[in-house]
Image 1 (cartoon, one colour):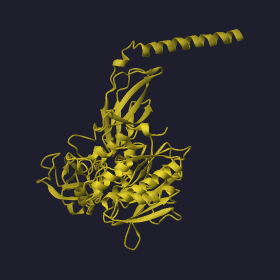
Image 2: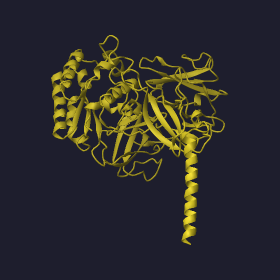
Image 3: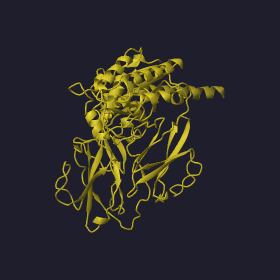
Image 4: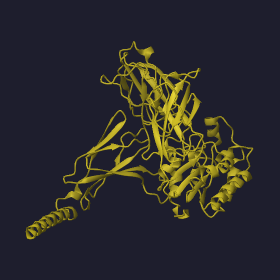
Length: 542
């Protein structure tokens, strides 16, 4: 019996070895020309969900899909692409993560003994065209008709401060232009500050067909690219009108993580002028109801807005749930609560290697209308390493110092990247000496708590654009103050110099192309910040 068992075991091992050798020779010696096979992919999108499909490899394998963004080309010694994430699949399709900026993908085939393909073309997300134009997410067809007050939603345009929406009774004069149509034009509005609007179509129901299109504008209401391709709207007057705010989670960067001070974001309801956000430690007892959740953790009312800034740090590990309702002057819910969204704060298993600390430049947001919930405007998105965001919008150097013990010490990162004082530059009442004293206080607190302080020099500002965006003047002596503060920062053993990368051609103010509002760097500016930091990893403590 033992001899028979030994025979079968030996026979099995022989067959297994033979098969393994055959597979090894096939993969490693490229007997069948597998390495010359190029993976070509196509993209399709339905209601905001994009799928990438490619021809299956002519050999049993699995696939690795890498996601990248392009770097700016403005920082020396930087690769062309910035890696974001990788995922694996045995399928020949891949659900592309939502994104808010141009992204690129590389598909690599792997066999049992390693990589098979040699040529890996970089595939571009087709939602970002040249010239730039918004891509509709919600399409209303015979199979999916709209109500008379539907939500019109599109993919956000990078650095688009606002949008112009046009309603037409037929196709426009020409597609993808920069001007309103003279033919079939019914109405238009520029009062759209996020990538969607609930629009009242009841005044236009007498027309046989309706179309809509939209274009992005900058701070001066100049076009960014062209109008989207006109989209027909099939209306069913019997269909219920949406009665809840629509959560704006359409263009979320891969690996999204709320900053320690979260921001909640939605697309406004037609006719609503006030909203209330509530935060919970458990899902609500009832979804889409009209009453606030008993024992909710926190709530806040905001007027005529589409985002809400949480004034409390959420650094305790666990899952948080939030939703928003529109409310009338009596405090009653208009319609019902939105769907419930959630975010998770992971538990720290040890000291995190890095965190970022400071004002709104650190907290995130940009292009005036984008809040820190839009992670494409956070420089942490483009770092080569994970970093917890402890930024808070509105901070001066003094308020950053005041909250250090409360916000930084519970996290206690090994390295703390510090950028605060830009709001202090704008105020004539705050001197450079005050900012320097505050930064010294933050520096000493880091040293006392075994945290390496890595100070970033302040970038320049653009007073003209600040006035245009916020209607507030800037201290005429801001440049002198900035130079004094940055000179102090450069006396420290660990600092990174951002200032030189942000000047315009005259080397006097913030380059307008890097910050719509003259203060907060937009996407390219946030990428530059990260690229400069990535190139100075030698100042970090490992």
